[in-house]
Length: 82
Image (tube, rainbow, N blue to C red; front, side, top):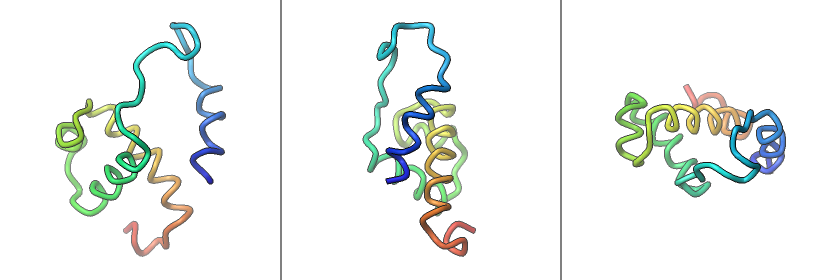
């Protein structure tokens, strides 16, 4: 699906200081990342609150939300995202 198509492109654009595959791994599974995005759309919390709720930094919460928002925008009708 769209997530699997975007992953190689995102990986190729990363600037890595560590060896390939090194560094911190994603803490959330894909279904949890989607839940984070849907929760954010419905409740509109700040990214700091969203990060606290999902045990991550506000930057990770922001990046996860915007990544999935683009994918969900292509799948869901616009009326659900407004």
